[in-house]
Length: 334
Image (tube, rainbow, N blue to C red; front, side, top):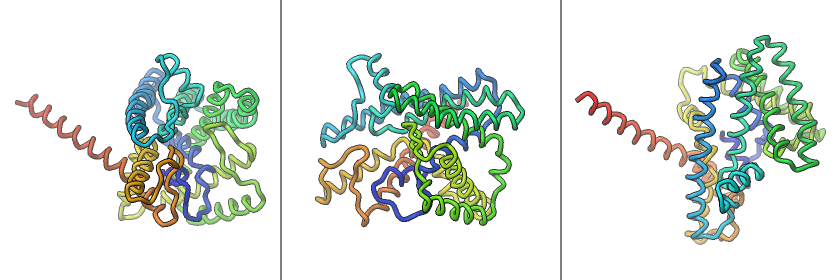
């Protein structure tokens, strides 16, 4: 989650793992690790509530805030609404949810919902060797064939298909290798991963995959390899950290609030832009949903605030909900 926030800011500290090499594949893979077997109907219900309904109301909330900010500072926010509801939905689909500049992550949530459903059907097969074979096949088709169709036609349907197929590959890999991935704790794993990734970079075969627009310039083998190497390194580190006697509550909190951070960090960046504008240090004419006050002196404020503010707001909402729930419970008792 921290890598996602870093990847959307203009200045980042030096590091080996390029966020775009692994962060979207990692989210899909975690879905496979966390998979719980339910019926197809229950899966559809869960997807509707956790993802589709979340996309709908978050889209409205973010668009309202973005329109308010834009009315004061005239910054680019995208074409959020059309004249009719049907045209709005059509525009959302054709623009891959990027019509709402501050809710770019919506493409992932929608693609993840469809991939979860597809993977639920595939997992019915039970035989893990077969599931792994299907995973590799659909990942290859998504990266090499369907992505090419999208590049040739600009048809958003092909883009969505590629997202779902590639995402499903990582989801199924997470499901098949769940026990192995959660048991890795050796520090030799990140060390070897860094060595291989750095070597790939020097050979010019390391590059970010842009799943949102189905761009895989390094090809299936190198993108899959670099993603899995980065993921294994990160999981080995986090598994080792999780096994410590002293729990890292802050990191656990960031993980539990990942969807909120993912959804609202771009708005948080713009709020900081406004603060620096008020201090006379930044011109808001340069601001947009992906352009912010990029400064080597204050970059850490953007990363820290982009993570912290959504968490604080979410915890506040959770607290208010708990108070109301307790009040309702007391009324029922009385």
